Each structure stands twice: as C-alpha cells, then as structure tokens.
Image (cartoon, rainbow, N blue to C red; front, side):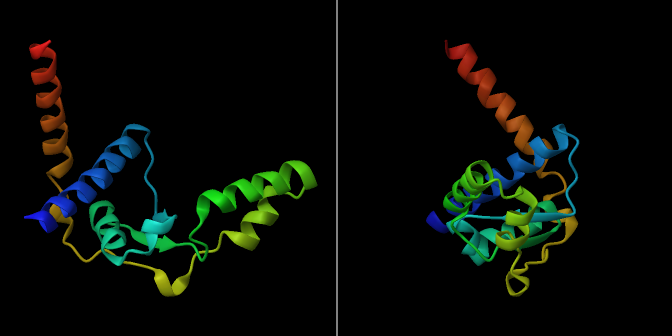
Length: 128
C-alpha cells in the first residue's frame, strides 16, 4: 500500500537519525524540525513518536535561505550569531508536537533496522 510505504520511509529516516544521534552520544531533550517538510503534521508526529521527544518547529520554514542570510549578516555586517538566532530562530509554540505512540512502539525498531541494513550490506557484498 502506497501510504504505508511512505510512512515506513519517513519512519526509517527518523530511526536512522536516532541511531546516528545515539552513536554520537547525543540525547536531545527536544527535536527541532526545519524546512518545508517540518510543516507536515504527520512527519512531525512520526519524529516525536520515534524519538519520544517534544518536536518544535521554527516560525520560519525557509531554513536554508534563512541560514545563508544569517551567515552573510554575521560575516559581512559582524552581527553576532546569537543576536540573529534570538531574532529569527524561535520555535512556534502553536506548532509543538508531543509523542503519542507508546515508548514500546519503536523500542525494538532501531536494532531491527540495524540488522536489516547489515543483512542488505552483506547481500550486496556477496554479489560482488
């Protein structure tokens, strides 16, 4: 089913992010989503459920353009980055998403995902 396949793809992306965050020994208290996809409530909910953390979205969705403009202002106009961040990188409290899924929902998924990736890699290597 297309809808289930799309959801699985989005879940896999966040599970992969969760695994990489753990590998780097990062344990965020909140997940900040930026960019156009951050406005999608379904994507935000999956992020909150996978990480079991509050998801906040910035008031500005054009994060790539905003980041470029902030870097230019910082380097060319010598405006402190902290000043720019406090002015333009505020979360929108009305857009906060909280986990709805039980923590058990994704408890075993990271290890299963890792096993799947390892199996796929071994299959590809054996074919070469």
